[in-house]
Amino acid sequence: MKRRVWVEIDIGALKRNYAKIVSRVKPAKVLCVLKANAYGLGVADYAKALASTDCAGFGVAEPFEAVELKSVLKKLGVKKDVQILSSILPDEVSDMVRAGVTLPVIDLATAKLISDAATRQRRTATVHIKLDTGMGRLGIPVAEAQDILRDVKLLPGLDIEGVFSHFPMAYDPEDPFTLRQIGLFKGFLAAAKKDGVEFRKVHIAASDAINNFPQCAKPPFNMVRTGINLHGSFDPNGRKALNVEPVLTLKTRVAQVRELPAGTTLGYGRTWCLKEKTRIATISAGYADGLPLALTNRGHVLINGEVCPVVGRISMDYATVDVSDVPGVKAGDEVICLGRSGRHSVTPDDWARLKGTHAYDIICSFGTRVQRQTREIVL
Image 1 (cartoon, rainbow, N blue to C red):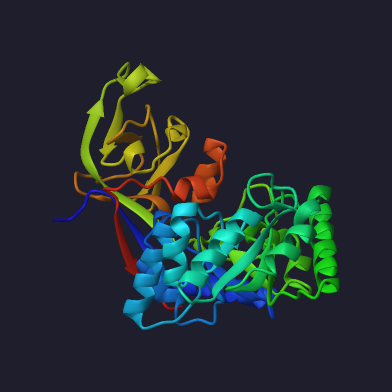
Image 2 (cartoon, rainbow, N blue to C red):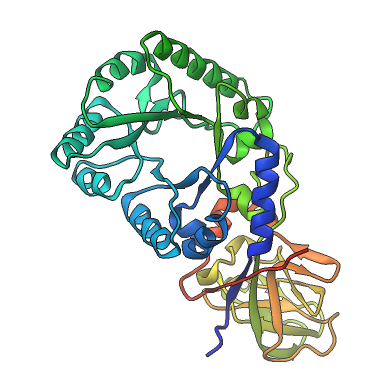
């Protein structure tokens, strides 16, 4: 039975976006971040599309995601690194070492737990040192990192493959704090080298820095991480150096069309009152499907290639739009909430600006009843 709301993911656009990112950062390698079920769009389809590329592997946030992605790659017959980029909890360490997941060292205690598990299992665990150069969220404070690294490198069963950090302000190309973080990171690398430690993978740039701080894809850095740029979106405050394209189209259908008299109020809170007789279409998508409440009386959708303003408050399952200028609209007609139709388009970045957020929030908000469909358009 056809779903009322669905999102179409253009795998061709995803591959083209990946190629553009690779072109910008080469010879640095690209780690594709597929956390949170590829930002809610379907990790299996994303992994299948990207597994045949030369990407350095895949980044996730936590063990469940790592195991799921490992399973997908095994079914595809593809060997790619899967790396947890956030943290690892004590009771998760043993299973993740057994699964061969690349793990973050966020403190000495975590390093010891990984070492103990690897030794018991007679394995070598691959780890990356997670530096806190200013994010203030997770990792080894950079001022303490050299001393801790000296202890970590003595632990058995560890392959200290890489080191990484993260920016809180890389969406601002003029931000001095980001430049300070780069300097601190490079200082740590120099100190580690004096202690006899050189890392095979060195990364600090995510999508924002790829656009705004290209020096983070040049030596000593040799890898970058990308998530939101794969989807064709950006942080609204930064540069858009990459000419990436949106990969998704969010669609629904018209539930009913009525001609309502002047004075009719629409939706919860009666936030819109019709000034004249108006044709109103009720569409079968609401905030449970990912339409932000911020679209209320401000956003629009596309029907038959034309712009239809949202009038009245977005509700959980429905929204009302003005179709006075679009002849022939009827129940069952397709509605584009995000995507392109004719000369018009609506992007996740458009919604993000209305909501005062960023595209990550928009893409991750599609509800569980929104069907994910993939297609590939080769240009």
